[in-house]
Image 1 (tube, helix red, strand yellow):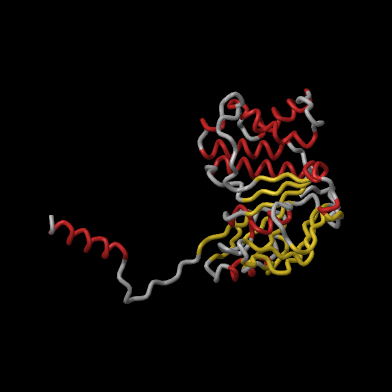
Image 2 (cartoon, helix red, strand yellow):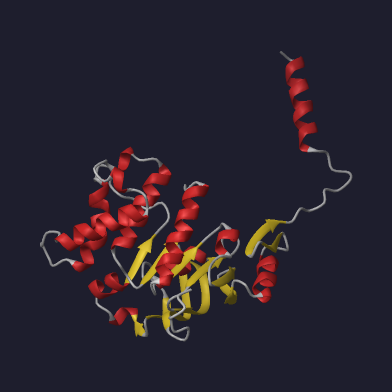
Length: 286
């Protein structure tokens, strides 16, 4: 967390937020406060509504209730102003494969450019900085379609960074990233927060989520708990939402989430025995 940040300043707020997908209610009267200059992770089981909540906060899907960005109703802000202040990195984003990497990242500068105006020297400098920060600068002249999944994800992250928004929302940003680049992402987020930015990320990697300043725990479209990631009450709520199949431990000052094994009933047949029997039967029929 940025030590100089005012912990009482609110970056994003949801008030009685409801949302549906395909006619099915997904979010139910969600109240949520995201504090400025902090990293908040959102976790929960599959189907908890995490991604839907993030999209509703970004005003990317219709929702009932109110979302406030830095104290203002998002609908009261113009599209350009909203795009300058809030940046988005989504799951499985569709981007034309024939676009150059540098051009993809330059899309992040559109909210700052005048209509039909070309990119300025400042825009080019910001794009270079964003690509270098995600170790993607060397691919700047390659097409997006030439990149592997993890490389593509780093380019899309650079695009989100190029917006230079006050608030960054990231939905599963670690998809396709190998462990070294996950560590790079963690360092990048910590650096952004140190500069006063606000980061909100939906994560399945619980150990990574525990490195955030604050954690939001969801289930069945509702927020069950919100608190500091280091708080024992957060760890208790985290274990409970995953049916006590996750335990939080501290190792060398870092919080880790480890799976809890469930004892196998004595009468259960090991999987390998089923496989062995099937293989033997199959072999005898050859």
